[in-house]
Length: 609
Image (cartoon, rainbow, N blue to C red; front, side):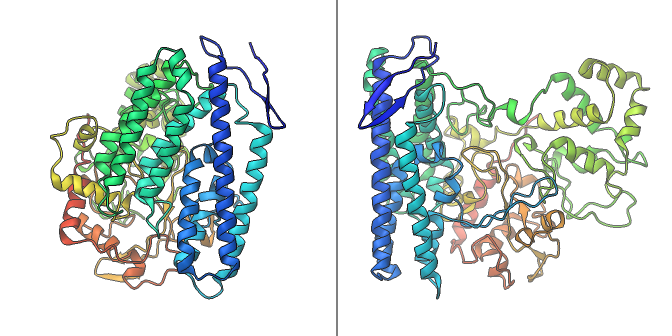
């Protein structure tokens, strides 16, 4: 039953929509949610005040160096309300703290409106890298943020927490996602690339989560879960204490923080949602609601990434994947170019065309974990795996087949007829054939490397070098700001719905690093200057097996790849490329740090069946 509570708070009318739990909504739970909303409102007000103060400092002509302190304070106040702010204001999250890059979500052959970056990351860049004429831009960005947060404050007063059936699950889900956000983005420096203010901001975020949990103390007691409440408070206090012992961004022991503090907290929050009887709204999203932490083997929701998969479809798809019947001359199957001993790549710079007269356009990518992608090909030109399958088969340089024609042939092969009968009730056509192959590809999951097993408790499996390499990858090396955990690809956390692309300035030849490769990347599809030389960020899982590297196979070794990034990508090698999204400055890694970084990447090698 839906219940309406008339709850005076100042002069505002709050309509609280009842919880669909076994025990029903209690006064304690209602009170807890009200306390959280009061806390959130207070934090929003503080955030707005900090914006006003920075605005005042700018108007009083303080130099950029003097603006850093009020800016960093403003960011830390933002982190105190981030967990609900970016959850409830998801449509505005990019204008509050989005990446400092212009975007255009090209869709169905129609370019959409170009969206310039706004928010805290833009403000940080303008303060830390001032140039002539940027002062006016800084004032405009701060004014825009001020107006946006003012509107958010008024909307929160009028609408309470969220338009949802259960406001308590909203709060706890936001807590859980904030822990994931801290792990995948916060401690990597993703949103503070210039100031590297990650540690104080993480403390601010955790302090708020502690306050939120404290709002539910009576709820835990009522549910006879006092020990569970005390456990959460202890874990949050311990995490903040650990952060206080860390010296700086580059030396921060992220791996220990994750395994000893964040993962137990994530597990605790997931279990609390279940123990308190809060039920998620019926929806399908990338993250599995029951997954206990970010590197849980079940972290991704198969219903979102791989709908309607069955063992029968996978069995059929595997046979089709290995059958050369799809090539026009009967000599090449999908497996020809995706070899198990090469990490489901082929080990070549570029494979040959079907007729052997030329090379294919790009390096063959690995197929491991292809299920956890929302865009396909290096240029992200298709959004469904079935479309990728059909594109490759129909490409005259790759396979030169016709799935519609070949499907007709499959109907006359008894073994295939039986398999299609089991998997698709006997329907054999272009659609079911492509879906079968895609189903097999979605089953190719590699998530049990030595690193994964270490994270899950087998602490003897990583060397000191590999552990340090992970900390470099997620910190000083800036790798994790593009290769996001847990897939270490461009799938953007914490919602994991969009695959990012980057402009790196990859050279045409390793011997001439100052000459840019001519492949236009996404531009070939979109014809947007914004996408010229932009390529999808691929996973580094099993990267030890998939040399050579980059879209054109230009680098033969991981050492070459690390050196390319060490020097600042294409810009660092003398290529003039204003649109490069990779910072053009040197990483300043030591030789030992480079070795450790590569050791970590090799710890992601898996040997799944």
